[in-house]
Length: 254
Image (cartoon, rainbow, N blue to C red; front, side, top):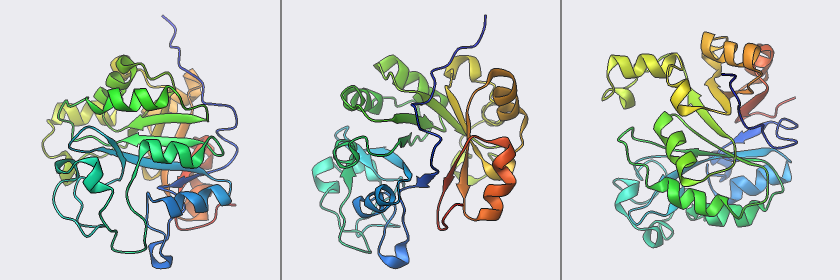
């Protein structure tokens, strides 16, 4: 049976994607905040952001599982309800944490959005229902992605119609994956979940490209491949033959 996948929205490859917005914390532009997203929109760059679930199931725009690095709060992000998360001060600047609904209203289709659903790989797919409800009424160019194949399954089952991408790399030896078995890590590194996750695009660590899985998906299936996170023009030039799009930060792509 031939593999089919949903195409990316028109114009999605026209401009590079700003990683967590066009952030630069030393200039007061904190990642995944309204100010960083406004800067990306002004620069006509697409926006990549991250979603964490609040204690009451809201989709919050925030990368970390813990609040400590960026905010004046502490502990797990999913221990607090959305109303409380929205009041937390960041350590830099005056922004407050946004919801995905806030972000959709802010961007309003002006630039492409790449929304990463964070995962502890614990089988909890509840956030997919909230994300699907919000995505249903969003008319702009939008895709979702996750490191966790189960999140793609949950999003699809919840009714998300936008393209879904798998984020991956070739090495899963770092600490956040310690709870996964060697078999699970091998499956992630080699896209062995492909038949279950059924991605529409692949987002791969640029340091690991070219890599067999993304190479075959792109060359044999015509599936788009993005790379993350590019932090120099040299890295962008090096990965260019292997990808269709880059997610970048801390430099201005040519």
